[in-house]
Amino acid sequence: MERPFARATVSEKAEKSLKSGQVRVYSEEVLAVAGDYRQGDIVDVYSKKGKYLGSGFLNDASKLRIRLLSRNPNDRFDDAFWRRRLQYAVDYRKSVMGGDFSACRLIFGDADGFPGLTVDRFRDVLVAEVLSLGCERIKETIFNGLREILAGMGETISVIYERSDGAIRELEGMPAVSRAFLDLRKDPSAPYEVTVVENGLSFRVNYGEGQKTGFFLDQKYNRQAVARIAGGRRVLDCCTHTGAFALNAAKGGAESVVAVDISESAIELARENAKLNGLTDKVSFVCCDVFDYLAELEKNKRRDYDLIILDPPAFTKSRATVSAAYRGYREINARAMRLLPRGGYLATCSCSHFMSASLFRNMLHDAASDACVSLRQIEERSQAPDHPILWNVPETEYLKFCLFQVV
Image (cartoon, rainbow, N blue to C red; front, side, top):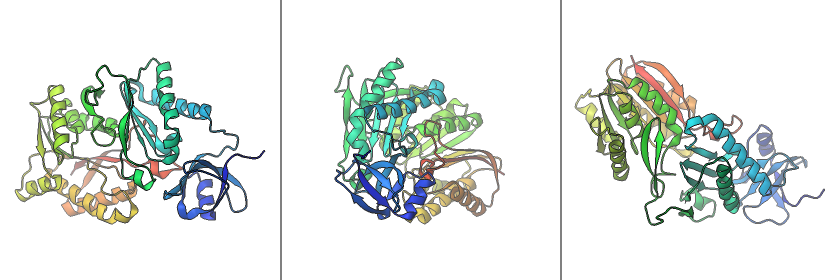
């Protein structure tokens, strides 16, 4: 049967990669495209010898020129296909998140078969980031499908907000977008905010103006791990954003918590979250550069804390800057280790895919050597299960979290 899609022929390198389970074909790996197509269309992918390898979105403007969707030649990519894929993703979250289903990531890009798409749920609000032209073309089907599937579970969605304002949109040949796709609130002029509950704590989420989709859901259970050892401790939370680690530590019984972030708007929202949870007596906030703050503590030989949390933004978003990022991670971790007393605790993270788990461990070895300390590992963790990792797609694994005692 003649297929309705243009035909892309890829290199032997791409063929090997796709056969190993990868879903990305880079621009230089596409040898030819035969047939009519528009940017963002689905194309069939073939080897140089004419073997069918799968079908995926094509965008000539993107470095990731083809994003594979399926290896099944019988898939039709109609509304029913997308609906089945959405249902599978939502059912998975319902299973693995349990009581946290009301605040979780519903769609995680390639891990759910929607390349370049993120959808987070905050109670009756869905916040989406669309970073591939293919998903841009079908986003109305996706958004309406998610709303209908959740309605079928008794879950009402009042707002669908698109935060597609990342720089990568330009690289994909698309303009930045930040607007409501659906807004059924009683007062549409009100700020785009919602309150969610995580680990028994309430957080205000500013999904209209906050970072990314407004709240970092991937650290949910890592924050629980910190709370378990925070009892009676003096805690420093570096790069606190809206205070999630800090407040989890305070709820866990910390004696005191100092939360530091360079963003004034983030600190203001963190203060509001502390007030919302009745923790203003335990948590204080400092707006400054974390590197400067740690350097000042070290300069003055201060040992004010026995639990330090490092949750910095990604220091690298490409392979080209990994070396510089390594140095940055090494410096901030070594400073924290030097500031802790023997027997103190360090929770440290990296959210960059390019800082691999092995590289992150090597960096921590180097930082411990710089600080002349030894590390006793308590836990090594990753992202929450609503951000699933596909072993055949290494890009889906990005968050590293380690909890140590300094000995």
